[in-house]
Length: 75
Image 1 (cartoon, rainbow, N blue to C red):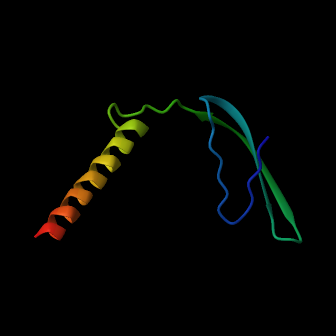
Image 2: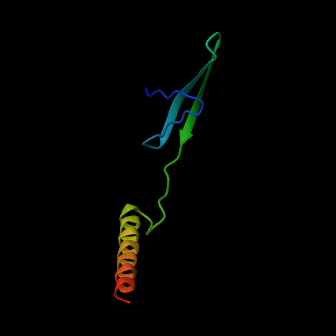
C-alpha cells in the first residue's frame, strides 16, 4: 500500500469501501504499530461547484480585472 511520513502524514482514498490501515510511530529508538479497519464513504459533490465552475469563476474575475484596469488607463 501507500506510505506517508512526517509529523503530519495523510492519505486520500480514491474509492468508498473498507480499508485496513496500519499506523507505525517511531522516535528512532522505539516503534509502535496500530492496526484498524476504516470505512470510507462516497463523497457527495455539491451541484454547481465542480472544477469547471471554479475555472469559469476565475476566468470571469480575470476579465473583470482586465476591464477595470483598461478603463483606469483611459481615464
